Image (cartoon, rainbow, N blue to C red; front, top):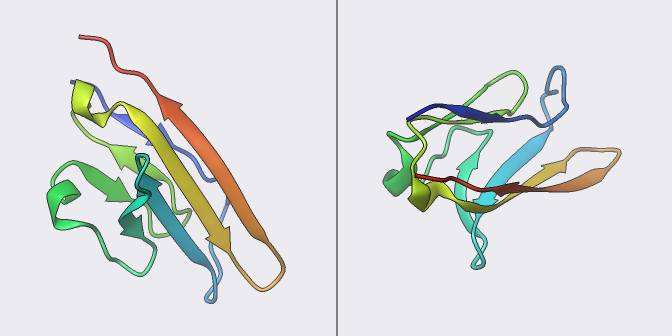
Length: 88
């Protein structure tokens, strides 16, 4: 399968920035900028240390769904949703 990159729109994260990626209706935390990646997703995703962009590698139908991005820094909190559809 192909790779998909979900972009935060951030050009460079700052020291105090918090970036969280969650998946699905339960809002399961799958990755955060501090290096935490959920064990079930470890071989499937990569988080860019500079931008917080999330790469889903070898995308499969089970990766379809809603990905929630939360960026929290000293000046704002930004929420963004990505709806990913995967066809076989």
